[in-house]
Image (cartoon, rainbow, N blue to C red; front, side, top):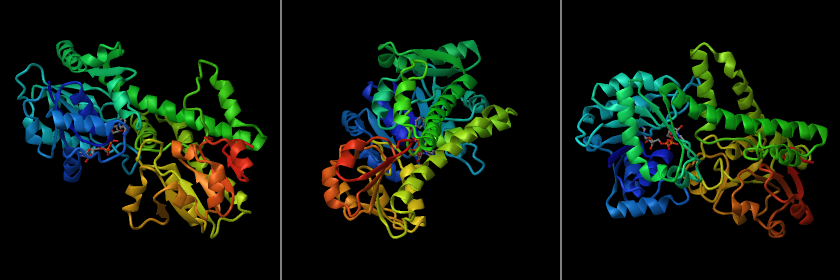
Length: 440
Ligand code: NAD
């Protein structure tokens, strides 16, 4: 099929490449000429395992192209909207990019001669958005589907090609819904053939599935971080606690690792946007708990700082601190709402001399000349002469770091394990004072 993907960021560029991998002819459109140039040359503008391969393979096959020219979308059968929906000043989602994308698309819709033409929204939007957009899309003869995306950065290629489930939010009118379903089923046929569940629903439910899934995940993380605070106060061990409660299959182990909290381009903004939308709908009190989830997430970073401070005798002033990890999670270079960078800035505010490193995000940081901290190219550089180490992102390079080797580089043997990802025994045996979140 001929398809287009409007917005080629973390979601859109991977989606475009994955759709080409399925055999479709894909045009990716973005307003950022630098991004389009990089993608066109097969250079990924961000770090994502497996992405370079499918990007280059499909550019090579001629099935995948990138452009800034919206006129190229005319005649395609499916158009995905994958532009950003960042947090606006009030906390609500800013839909400027969605509206701008649709405005740019409109003159070129309604030209498909292969059958029903579908606009499929993948961006995470406030509930009610699709219903408001539908008449505009329908005026061109195209059908609107909301097809939210659940991929995880770090596993984006795998998740796009082998998702847990597909959600189609369909138009209310039965004939339109049936035609739109058929088009998406044809597009996703190789994925659906694996037996992936495909769930049909209305627009508001599809929009809510995405945002409520993220709200649940954020809540789970803040729950275990709240338990870490209790463990710290009461002398318990949150890792044993998480292991034990996770064995209850109703609870499960995933997202129960206490640490310095969640970040990235989705969870923080999505829980705030969800609260703002609930307020607009007059049911703000139903989501008041998400403000607590957000608050716990902020406080858990301070927890790490308190530990760092007490490790260095009550003051971080002039201490050299190595922060390992700037990406909000391993296998990504996404530094949006990065817990590690938030901690790095707070350390600087306390007078510390901070050096940050990250296997994927360091080059991005290094481009910023106004940073209040230094950026090291690699682990060895960062550890050299450090008085304290803070593990902020559980990259394998860091969790597998040999503490005996690290001890030969540092000035002071102190480590705060902000992800509960290290082996405390090994680090203590190498002479380090080790502290973690919610552990003695
Ligand atoms: P991003 O900022 O990486 O990418 C957005 C892209 O849209 C940018 O390349 C930008 O230049 C482009 N853009 C902006 N305005 C445009 C326009 N008018 N026309 C064409 N392109 C335009 O954002 P992202 O992380 O890819 O997220 C996109 C959406 O997907 C958001 O709603 C996000 O919540 C959702 N989402 C993201 C993920 C993820 O893991 N990143 C997962 C699921 C859902």
